[in-house]
Image (tube, rainbow, N blue to C red):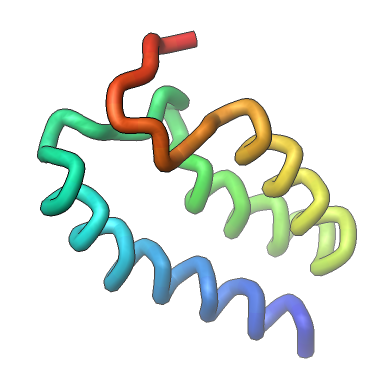
Length: 74
């Protein structure tokens, strides 16, 4: 199921990629939103299904710029 695959990829990102990213960019780099983009993506997937959930998550990421080193809070 696509929903399970995307959920696994997001959980993998949170568990493996995020710690590496923080180590490379510094501990001060955090999500600008009160619920992180990865948590938002998981919630959107479970509430709206794979198609709409992924589109919602991509829209959020487009506004977030998660790989920017020092960005101002929105």
